[in-house]
Image (tube, rainbow, N blue to C red):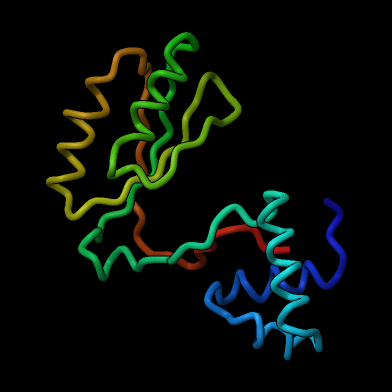
Length: 149
């Protein structure tokens, strides 16, 4: 699907406020509600919009410790380790990175006791991991969800 300027503006507005109504988007872009609905439906059908979601403030729901990990794995174990970690509820994101079979992972937990338990009992216990490096978030200057056009 080739995006035109109207599609890009719709995506920008929805990325800023996923609850914005088709009427309000139409007013902003000088188009009808029906036209906006059809365009959004096409964006969904073509996989441009994967899903609508909500961004939750992790601190407000008791997940005050944010840590990032670089996890090196034996090449033959990478997919198994990645799938295991991705299925862990404290893992917010997990990506394969360039480098020697490296995973980049973001973890959100309640406190440092839970973080220590995750590291010792759930991470270090996985076979195939050769190195783990961790970084604790001190302060967030920018956080972005989704893609900005």
